[in-house]
Image (cartoon, rainbow, N blue to C red):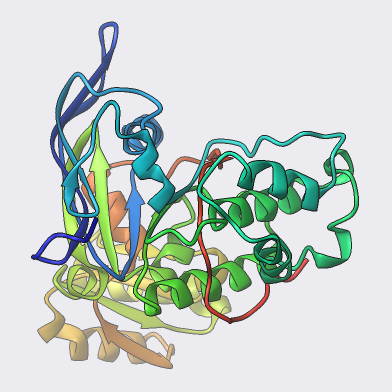
Amino acid sequence: MSESADGVALATQGLAKRYGPRVALDGLDLRVPTGVVYGFLGPNGAGKTTTMRILTGLIRPDAGRVEVLGRPFGRGDRRRLFEVGALIESPSFYPFLSGRENLRALAATGAPTSRSRVDELLSLVNLQDRAGDKVSGYSLGMKQRLGIAGALLSDPRLLLLDEPANGLDPAGIAGMRDTLRALAAAGKTVFVSSHILWEVQQLADVVGIVAQGRLVREGPIEDLLRAEGTVRVRVAPDQVPTAGPALEAVAGAGAVTVEHGPEAGWLDVRIDPERAAELNRSLAGAGVYASRIEVGTTLEALFLELTGTSPDLGGAAGSAASGGAAPDGPRWQA
């Protein structure tokens, strides 16, 4: 099996799914290029988990078409998932077995895997020192890392991850980011569903944003953020209360969004980028001096504009299916 001639590793067309009267997917069309990290985003209830379940054969769509690695995928094609690694919903392991024993048991259910592969992956996700401990004593983040090791067991060309950062601390998230980008650089395709938008902005090459079961925007992340007619202004965090009104004096009431968390000190201004100098003059008149001014928006601002909602605050990360080999790269921190 090989990727399609046009370089698409995963595609859906007209994907539809109902649960009784509730519409989960309403004609979802996705195109995921080969060799990228693809961020799959949407508010809670937008259909992300339903999509992930369909892509891994856990449920069937009511209508539509799925293409995996260049060929139609449907009922009866479960063995083809040996070429797909997946982590959907919460990782499930035998609590009375060790991490190493769980991976060996999982390997026995899929494509042939060498015994050395298990230890290689335990090292990759920084669990080698706890590999002999029972999983019942693992933290949520450790179980998550073990689940991703399980998804990498059989060296898949396509990796599907639902909320892979669930339970990881900041160092673990950074390690995961480096590992996933290394996989993409090695030619694999990584499809990530996540609600951590600032992390997806650093991780993904391409994003697809869904709302109410339909795709509302898709494309290379840099192109999408650059095209939104927004100016980003960086000031000292303690000057944000003064900077906001000064920027709105030029752009208009409600045109300024203050970023929080890791991006504190940035303000997004919905205005023609050609008017950036006016913004700078207004700030200076208020005694505020910008340290940086950039054209383009953030993924969070784009998400809010397209969906009218904040990203879901929950997020399941899931059970391991077959998986694959990772190139040498950064190890995940505990």
